[in-house]
Length: 238
Image (cartoon, rainbow, N blue to C red):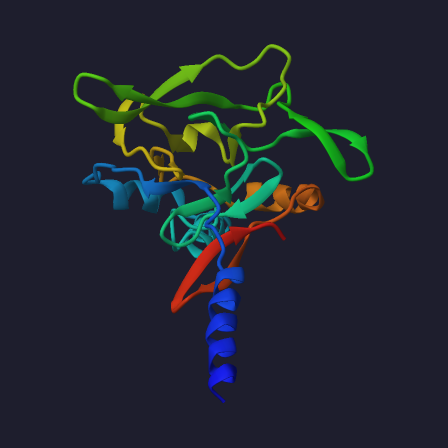
């Protein structure tokens, strides 16, 4: 019996050790409501726009589908497709090692096929609106503090979208990205600066478009693993 107890004590730590997992680094960002000043005559203007029944339905549809302004916005990164939750958060498994990324805001992109459903790369579509920003983590050596530097960039002449880019499927006029410096921490997780969503955004057209290209993407899913007595939530490939 004593020998059995010793064997058991040896086996249990081995099992716990073998089930131990390491958290996967992620790249994430938050969508926030764009701060707008309420107009005193906003109700009057809205009333003028919906005098006819047809216009009333037109203005009720966005209200019905956009109860959560920052939720339900699709984005892509490194072959993954995700949609923001009701708090505005989107997360992907991190697939590059450099301390920078890009924000690309555009409603549609074009797949360049290698074979089957395998994509060689994505490209911008001519005459479709798009805005590109570089988001780079830097360090202020004097203050020993890290920060994000956000810089607006011209669109690439060859139309090729970087594999490090986070693509937000939206009209770029409806998403505001502050340029300049945003304080951050030096962690393995890339938490990019916030983006701001304007109330006039229409999410339905982009959501319908994403349905036509969803077969080219893999959605990130949450996997649950146990390490000792703690439960770990990690991002895993589907």
